[in-house]
Amino acid sequence: MKEDMKEWLEENPTLKRFEKKHPALAAFLGKRFSKSKPYGRRFTGGLLSSLVLFFVFLEIAFDVVSRESAALDQSITNFLYTFRNLSFAKYFLLFTDLGDVQGVLVLAVVLVLLFLMLGKKREALFSAFTLLFGEVSYAVMKLIIARPRPSLWYALVPRSGFSFPSGHSVGSVVFYGFGCYLISRMVEKKSAKAFWWFLAIFIPLNVGLSRIYLGVHWTSDVLGGWTLGLAIAVLSAFLMKELEGKRPMDKVPVFQKRSIYQITAGLLALAIVFIVYFYNNNPLEYKIPPLPASPVVVSATSSIEGLVAESSFPKFSESIAGDPMEPMSLIVVGSEASLKQAFFNEGWVVADPPTTANFIKLGLAAIEGKPYPAAPASPSFLNAEPQLITFEKNVGGTFIVRHHTRFWQTRFLYAGQPVWVASASFDSGLTSYLVYHQISPDIDTERDYIASDLLQSGLVTSESKVQFVHPMMGENFAAEPFFTDGKAYIIFLRNS
Image: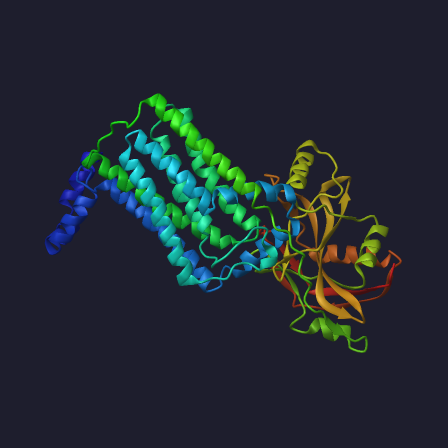
């Protein structure tokens, strides 16, 4: 088959005409895709892979500059800020410290010395060069793009400078990722190789996630950092492989193997002491949450129907990327206490927050068929903010089928009372992979059911139904279809 392909390429008239018209270019391409020539097929493949990754980085950078990624970034940051907890914050603090320039430089010195003691001069040179090139590259890109960081109120650790790309993400890939790759080449057992490859992925992954979780970078900063770092690491790896076959270097160890292990163990011990010291002396920085934006006060003499008809009044829930989804089905005027009491009176419960522990609990309940009355709901967004309250009522003793509605508090105050908006949908079952709920496409029936329950709660002082948006069909974040007549209930609650 290979011989037939080779013969076809040699006899192809189009290629022959190209070679005749552009002999220099044809000779250059022939060498680049040759299996035996220097900087041939293997290096070309690595170079192309690196270029693809770099173009992905440029695409992310373009989205950042054009603010295409702004809604997604803000939604993820707001969601994590709402449900952040101390245990995960301390876990990620360790990885953010591992990615800090001080920790990376200390460990880089240990790695370079290890390679030199083993006689691996090329590995020492490339590990240092790759790290240096990565540090310079992200520093230059930060100055070019000059993106502001997330608000100081999100940050749990010190931050300075511009935001895109994440220097921790670039540095973790070019040091930990590339360094672990170099070490994996020095071991023979498959299990040992797998261990170092695992670290090459695990450490950079957690370093990048730590920057988002601790509130010092946007998600696109980290994605850009990973792709830029990977582009550099891939190019460096293939270049080193190419040079290995062409220019052998002296590999005589500087020390005996036993001495090497002893010295390396001592250096690693010092590095660990430094990292522990750094970790303990750079604690999390908790801040008082900022005050909410000043509300828009609307007098009771104004028409509530006129308020909700304004273009500034929120009309649709949003996906995490900021795309509109279901229209709001309920507009409720009343205090948070009255809102909760009205639902409690009719047997509804407030859903648990969507934490990792609660989603694990939900998954186990789904597999075992056990009830979970307050099972968490997936987040939807309004102005990049996740819902403040989710109410649900299970059907048949299982959360798999349930009524539920998500509430957001708007910035409006009507007659001194908060104005809430809510989307409504009926969860009719779980997908085959137990990832999310399927919804009944007729969201108006669920809207009417919830309004009926509120009317029976004994806390409603008045209600009306208005044409809120045009009749429409659409899909939610999980591509589940829905249709609606576009009407919404306006409900006033008395103080409970």
